[in-house]
Amino acid sequence: MTTRPQASNNSNASPFQELKKLAGMKFRDWYLKIAVVSAIIGGSMEFFMIKTGFYDKVSVLEAEKRAYENSPEAKAIRDALNPWRHQDAEARKNA
View 1 (cartoon, rainbow, N blue to C red):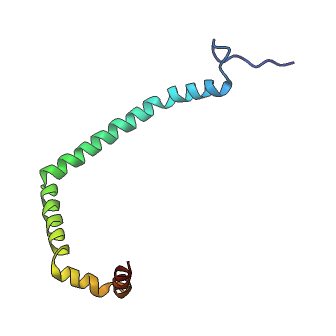
View 2: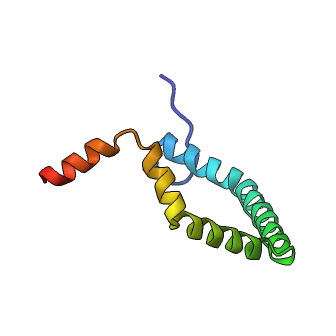
């Protein structure tokens, strides 16, 4: 009859719980390093975008896009390219 060796002083802990505890301790420093490096890279990217005026340019482009989408010309193009425009109009009349 063979006996299983105890991994810790806690006799109620299952082998799976012990393995999970050891794995968590083993990889904790690796995850911490990844988190720190990711935060540094993300912060650097944000700093670069602020310094180059990226957000100002994007704001202007988005405003121009919204202005065009609300123009009568864009509405006419959307209506002309919608193959179901007649069915949509009939559905609204019947509702």
